[in-house]
Length: 235
Image (cartoon, rainbow, N blue to C red; front, side, top):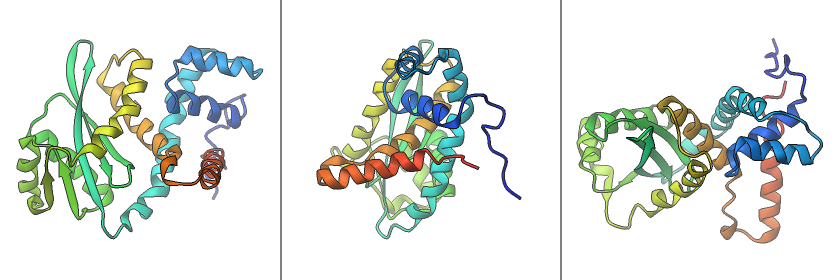
């Protein structure tokens, strides 16, 4: 039995919906910026329509990307995680966005909490390990919550903490910070969790790390990523 297409009740073609969602999530653009870009291409949609598309199809696209990558990530022979947390303001109240990145720059998980204690770190670690298994090394900063959570899990021997060891996680925050500024911050904790999860996997899909390849290989990888995006959620 074939799975029904998620686009079956929409008048616009799936290519337009995928393009609008990609522009909004991938680039630091507002909803009205995306509306103007689509208008230049002869596509007349409202920014509220783009908001609805992103809320409806963003998680679907992200889940399909994640499903295609989880099995490949588990096959790493020398897997190293980098864990870090950043401060995010929601209506003037400080929240914490926990993020896990592997040694190749792939964002594994994002998790939003109101506290930065052992309980929050423990939930975050269990959530990642349930999906990806256990890594060989876990690099963190000197936050004591990580060490306390590692002892509960029985993974304390794999933890490494140092001043510059976690630069991989620190640099991975930059794309999210650019999107946060373009969106003029977040209004609700649920919206932050949803956008951070979707943005991380879409960023993984299009992040080709061009400094590691020649120009010819980078163009091939970019074309392949775009072709794969155009096939997401296709019947």
